[in-house]
Amino acid sequence: MKSILFPTDFSENAAHAAHFAVMLAKKIKAKIILLNIYGIPVITSDQLAYDATTLIEDEKHVAWEQFNEFKEKFIKETGFEGENIEACVKYGFPSEGILSTAADYKADFIVMGTKGASNIIDQFLGTNSYRVAHHSDCPVLIVPEKASLKPWENMLYAADFESDEIAGTHSVVDFSRLFKSKITVLHIREEYEPAIVDPADVIEWMREEFEGENVTFKNLNRSNVIQGLETYLKTHPTDLLILANQERGFFEELFHKSVTKHFIQASNLPILIVRKKQQIFMD
Image (tube, rainbow, N blue to C red):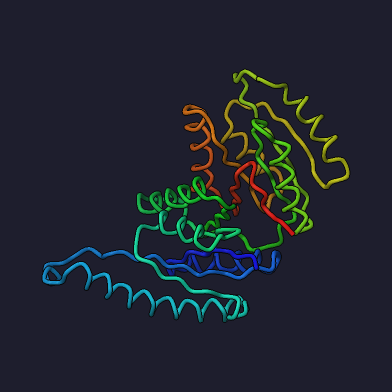
């Protein structure tokens, strides 16, 4: 049975993201693994006599109590069957704990709630989401607190036309079929960026490869990729934004990190982050 890892901190934002996890689970017929990661709290003078082991055990007890309450609320509000839910509570750091648990369970997806970066704490939370998305071996769905829960009728895949784009697009198109979605593959080329391959040629190849699919290919020349993508999203109905990770050189990596981080922290759209050669869905 397929599995979706859903990390939770018991917040309202996590409760909101839970509905997206359930929507995805029903589509791919997956169980959901609820995960909470706890750490040692800030130690006050009254707690100095406690040793670290005692503090960890106390936090574990509190975490399980909160976890059970969240699980009951999760089942009640989403209607997801309890027998298809597993519980996991771990001590550690958030991003590392999420990645290790995903590997242990061989998760097919990770679904995470995140907040907009309005302050330094929210920026830290966004960074955790980015770390998980960047290093995960499986696709990661990032759900902002203001994301609307609605059918994914229109998906936008922001393609860079690098590496094996046809393989990456095949995975994205396969995923879109689950939701009977229309998908747009959009390439934004910065106006002063030298083109190794003519985008028009790539689009011609892609149209031949995906003839008959519900997919549209577009290339835009803009002064800035982030601004170009933001403008496109404001003027074209989009329910899910898809971004791809892949191994790159140092300077390319810095650029793509900035694009991904920006949308994780600033977007109100759910964002699916995949590795280009990853097969997102298998029968």
